[in-house]
Image 1 (cartoon, helix red, strand yellow):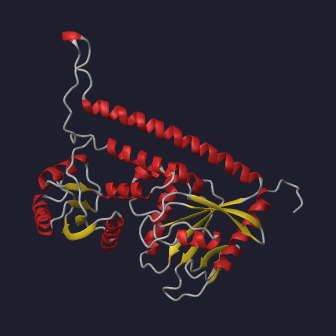
Image 2 (cartoon, helix red, strand yellow):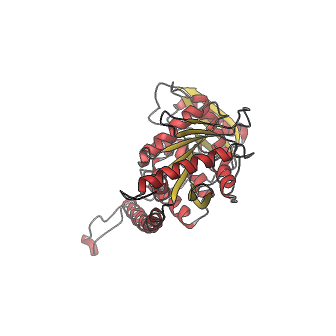
Image 3 (cartoon, helix red, strand yellow):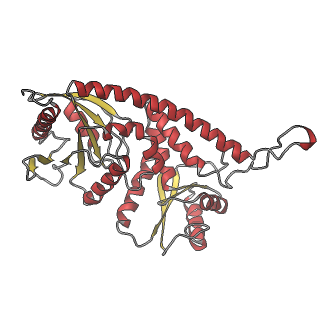
Length: 375
């Protein structure tokens, strides 16, 4: 494996401003990610550049500044608010003599900590292997060519890196086969629900928007809830009975975040399939967050990436108790409910949300009725 210095609890954060919008929000999000990963922030090194440095990403001057911060704070980990190339990461670790983690590596570490179910752990392992396969570029210390063939005339054989890549490909293949099997099982369950005209609803939203709290409020479940990023990873489904229209299957999915690693989106494709195949998405939005519009855009980017952007959405504006907004709903020009203001914490507005679910289910039942059928 890649030989790197062991990490510690104290971390130095590094963030560069390339002139893009939302820099401060992204930096605060990095702080939250680091705390979620169980690290303590002991120092922050910032800078401005027109573009990343090819060797160290931050340039040699900033590398010295980071080294000084490491020594002054007795920190053992440097966390970048950016994705590093394999060579940049290797160069930094050699220069700083400590563990260097980029944004993707940090998120993968959090996912590895939080996954609880068998499927969730497989998905995280798949994402880690896919990420690791990109790190096998001169970052290994055992790349001497292995001798092949028989006797003195043996060929050059495979390099260790080729053997490791093949090993990773084999592991990825096994994991994908297992996840595909679980995906087929869920497909059978969805077809059974569709025959029974049971509506499938998925909760989506930016991480920490209150999806799991809303899920618990609607279904009376005990899904883990915490005021932190990625509090829950594993998709949980429960049946919810709407008095006016019947049962609904409600699924709580992983929260989204800016620059969610493609390896994670790909690995969690089996789980996110529930979102793609849903009849309705409850897009949960933290109305108390000043960056809610940007967060909505990020969620929709991921939905577009997984092919779920065309699934009907109901915007659930959550946490109205913080800004002091009253529960309410808004209809579009066709009379359909498009927004509901609620507080999952206090329960305010839950009846309005159930009303919206009932109306959507009634429309779905009408759409699924055979031609000529009597309602």
